[in-house]
Image (cartoon, rainbow, N blue to C red; front, side, top):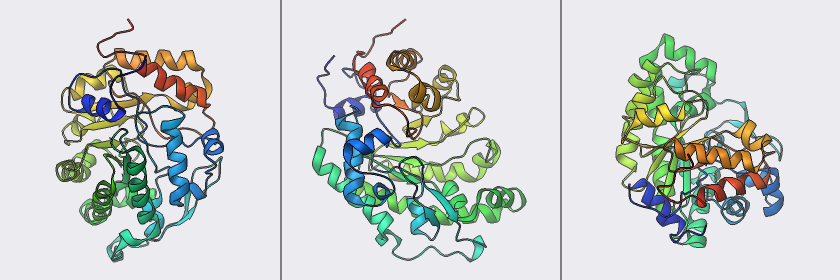
Amino acid sequence: MAGKMTSMERVFAVINGDDFDVYPAINPTSVATVEAMKLSGAYFPAAHTDPEKMASLARVGRDVFGFDSVSPYFSILLEAAALGAEVDWGNIYEMPSVIKKPIKNPEEYEIPKNFLDRAEFSGLIKVCSELKKTYKNEVPVIGKVIGPWSLAYHLYGVENLVLDMILEPEKTAEFINRLSEVPFAFAKAQFEAGADMLVWADHVTSDLVSAEIYRKFIMPIHKKAASSLQKYGPIILHTCGNVSDRLMYIAETGFKIFHMDSKNNIGDSVKLVGNNMLITGCINNPVLLAQGDPPDVKRAVEENIHQGIKLISPECAIPFSVPSENLMALTASAHNTCFGYSPH
């Protein structure tokens, strides 16, 4: 079924609570599969930092897979690398990883001046501008930043950060607040360059931080991000894993959209957040998209819609092995469903 709206119109109609033609399918994180790299000629590791290759790989998500968005940030380590972490940028079968963290004592760490001029930042900013020119106002460009909690453990280490938060919560919270300068500035720069929406990726799941610590120390930063950045465009909070014990807090942050993991109950989550935010994600990656087939994907999309999801998307970064036909089935299944239709 061919929709009458452009992707931009369709996505923003959903966000604004207006009627839309068919359900939009977006990719808030990464669709950088092996097949996508081969189709674009843009391979990891170069596609993480080379603006031309970043743009080429991002376009596959729209031009081949059919998503109603285009997203050029394929990892979670651009900021960490720019701020001193030694990063292995991976290959066509492996995501990047931090191999040496630069911070030994958070109290002594100083954020570099003019950090946005560093190549990892300026490259993505340039790509946002280029993609905006390519798609004009017909397809939303989704930028991305790494929130200060996640950035802190990339620079300092998960174990160190979690232990410090338990033993010295106020001091650790001050460190996280200082780091928040980075995603705030980077987000604003991407919007000014052409991004229409932005993912704020912060992995504040129950295996890393308690719900109470989230509420007390991280939620205020999220509220500030929502209130100060959404004048530029909608912000999507992305968090992997189970968040059922803190979803009520996330719903109060003011973020327009929450990109949710399939580990959470979709129906319960939609009811809990109510009218406070939209939920997207929930399409399972490692089993469904990587190992299933198009009919399986179609059923999952229909079930998402039945549970109240209006923005269809994979739950997180796509595994490298996901076949293109499954991603095309995801977008086609959404686009073949009119607003108001229920498969049950």
